[in-house]
Amino acid sequence: MKRSMNRREFLKLSAASATLLPMLSANNLLAAQTSDEYKAIVVIYLKGGADVFNMVAPIDDAHQAYADARGGIGLPKESLLPISDQYGMRENMQAMQQLYAQQKLAIIANVGTLLKPVTAAEVKAGAAIPFELFAHNTQRRQWMFADAKGQTKNGWASRIADNYYSTPNPYSNINVAGVKNLLQYGGKADALQFEDAFISPDTMTYYGFGPKSGGGELGKVYQELYENKRNDPHKLMAEFAKERVNQLNLPLKLLNLFDGVQEFEGFSTGTHETGKPLGSQLELVAKILSVKDNFPNKTKRQIFFVDHHGWDTHDKDNESLVGYLSESLGAFQNALQKLGIEEQVTTITASEFGRSITANNSGTDHGWGSHAFVMGGAVKGGQIFGEMPLLSKDSPDFWQDRLVPSTSIDQYLATIVRWFGATESELASIFPNLTAFTPHDMGFMT
Image (tube, rainbow, N blue to C red; front, side, top):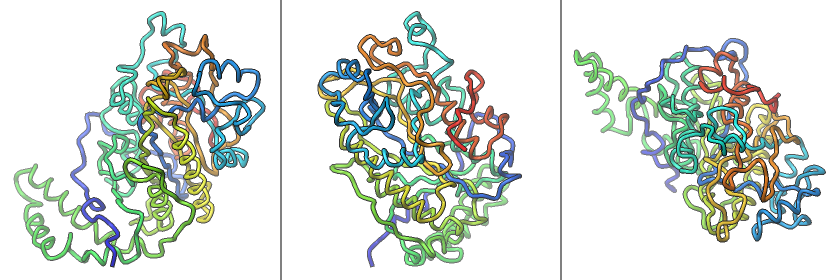
């Protein structure tokens, strides 16, 4: 039998990370009291900084200014797929164009990290801007923590889980990327990691998981040792033993997780793809969603992390990445339609920053503002939300050839989390800098 899952990665759960933030109140989200409906957020992180200015480009009279500004990397007007009288998508984005036409995909214009609302003119005059704007690591952290001020010590997905569940829930955050991420870092429970999309109903049994095993006979010995230390007078030892017992019991709780798992078609892998293929990750998310009711206590809110590498395009165009993303989103939305849960799953994109408007060799340099895409049956698709910038050499929306965001990440994410069930006061706890911006709800979710 083919080895279908990396057990060590799949079951790798460590003690919940400590946080310097005050604990959010338990069971606060409005959905906890009023809704029994399942909802999920799927975050596709475009790692490296996505150049979106060829993904959505003008097709009206503004096209010539766009082409002049972009130089050799600009796209001909006739190659763009119209989505409105003003804008078109790249010619290999047929799936996303179709989703947009079906009102299942929306564009969130010019999103980025901000301390407060600011214009390009104000930035030029010395207005405060986020720390280390164009650095991958700091901007990635600010996006995943949803905090440009550096006030928080954990990811926004972890804060949601801690706010929703009164006790640590290891099933609320799921990582299918095969790499750690800050989005799901620092909560009461670590994210549950799934390593492979090639799963089957008997996977857990095949690897020898059973009562009190934690991984076979050796696991029984470990568990007995830890059980004896659960009431140790040394509090740190007792807490550590308690956590280890919980981790060793996890395989038993998930023994029948994949019973009835469904198969899907249309997911492909990219060319020379770095890291775990995007198609494989989204296929795995679809399979997990097909057995979502098999999770203990039928967890009602889940956030999935998907990592798509390769978007740091300094010396090349991102054409293949764009086409692959479009194809993968189309396949994933088809899978959700097959499962009948389009209204319950919202897929969003995020990236540490956009790119420069002018070319850097054959690619572009690190930027600031960028466009995001939101997909799902609960999305008010077929629309652009926020303010689209003027793409020209002398654009008033650019500073040092970088787009100054007109929408903050706080507003973008808060709109999605409100759909997830959060009240206004809870949003303020999850996104501490949200009060600096209006509106708090951008209106792109039903």
